[in-house]
Length: 271
Image 1 (tube, rainbow, N blue to C red):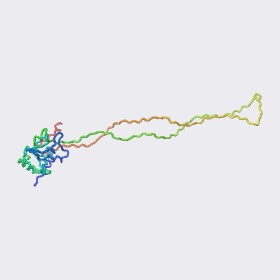
Image 2: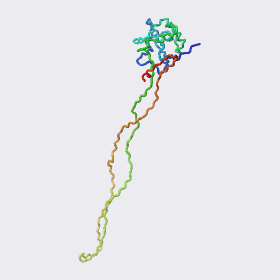
Image 3: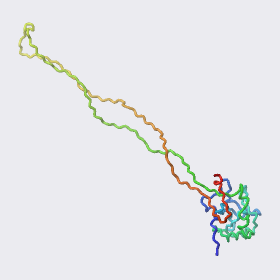
Image 4: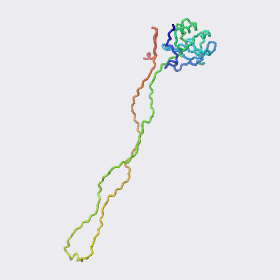
């Protein structure tokens, strides 16, 4: 009966949100060198124990062999200046005996095969099978937990346009204007002293007096004069606007398999 895969050991490139911490070397693509100075292959990926948040294996694409093998992290040593991973603690026969890694789940049976190839009786119980000083302290591999933060910025956009134009409207105006005109008043006065007035003669012709009469008439004239002035300017109005967003945060979860497992969270220590 085949052993069940240990789903907690997963390739790094299959873990969304997991990445090598800033400032730490990402050894994927580095050359893997043996103890005699020959190249075994190159690092294709890292296998991470998601429960312990630690790198467990180095996935090596073997040169000229058309296969992948996994080297326990305890047998890998970094040469950062040369971008190389040294597996000089394993001999050529041990490297040749490593089982082929098919990118499937890591099973206890597979780990036992790796342990036998490394001349270990029980792989997981050997202290240095999963541990290496090169991946601790300043050179340790770290698992970064990411979170989203809200960054609110402002940009200038056109909100609209205001057009100011003139139009002509008609208004009916009524005004009362005083005008003057001349009229004729005829006054009859009797002559009391005919001798003083002088005698006249009656003639066949008619005597006529013509008096010109004047009158004022209204003359309507329209002229254009400035009535008022429009000054159009912009002013800035400041308003408060609420911004709502949903932010995501990654948290580490540890599934305890033994009663002596302890988890240290630096954020809890700072409280």
